[in-house]
Structure formats: structure tokens, C-alpha cells
Length: 175
Image 1: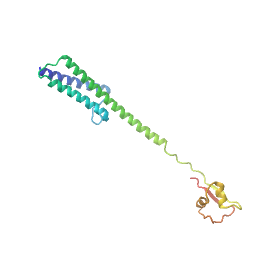
Image 2: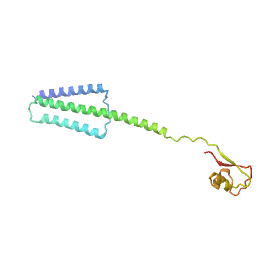
Image 3: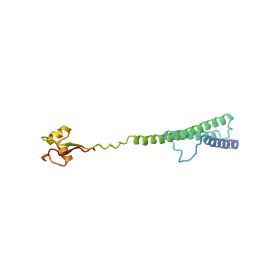
Image 4: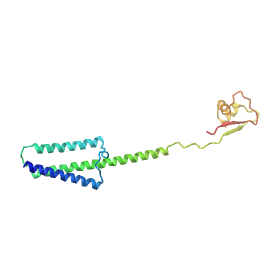
């Protein structure tokens, strides 16, 4: 009797293994450690499901010694195993979708960073003032809304420098 159960269990494992392979081919899912990268929540669910399945198998194998497994028990285990397989396949698909979405987010971030880069300022023309008779550095600075110090710095002069009519003073460097 135990041999019959062992054979049935081996058959069930073989059926499930082939079923998983078919489902993966249909959904183009490859089983590779580098591709299956489940988040902690999904990993917990998978480990829980595997643990429950292992517990059910152990209980069935060791409960009652030589007790024969009924067809109902067999089908119940088979159904639970199918549910576990489907859950794992869904989790793998979800993980692939998450990876795809993450790559799209990275692409969007790169595009956004290109859009938000500061645009090189267009070169402004330098502004000059031609000194007229009677003008002083302070009046010229006041007229253009800048300080005397800035006016002197732009023209490489000091506040005590004498300016003459016709002299051109730089007011704005254009940058």
C-alpha cells in the first residue's frame, strides 16, 4: 500500500513538474536564479506556501502508518499543489512586471533630468554708458540701479578716478 502511495506521489510530482514547465513556456517565463528576484513580501508568501505543502506531505506520509490514501485525499492534495503552482507563477509574473515598471521609471527620470537641465543663458550684449559733462560715478550708478563699487569694479577704476565727457563706462557685462 505504501508503495502505491509512493508511486502516486511520484506521478503527482511528475505531472506538476510538467505542468509548471508548460505554464512557463506559455507565459515565456524562464526559471533562472538571476531572473527570479522576489521582493520580501512575495518571498514570504512563496516560502509559506512551500512550507504548508511540505507539512501536508509529511502529515500524509506519517499519519496512521499503513493507512491507504483515499481518492479524495489524493485529489485534495493535487488541487492544493495546483493552487500553489499558480501562486508561484503569478508571483514570478508580478516580479517581471515590477522590474519592467522600474526600468520605465528610470527612463522617465533620465528624460526628466534632461528636460530640467538649466538652459545656457543667451549671451546678453554688454551695456555701455557714454559720460556726459557734469556726470559723476554715483549719478551714473544710480541711473542704472547699480552700486558705485560695482561700476568701478566693471571698469577697473576707483571711486576717486576722474571721469571725462565722451568716456565709455561698462554698465553690464552681459553675463
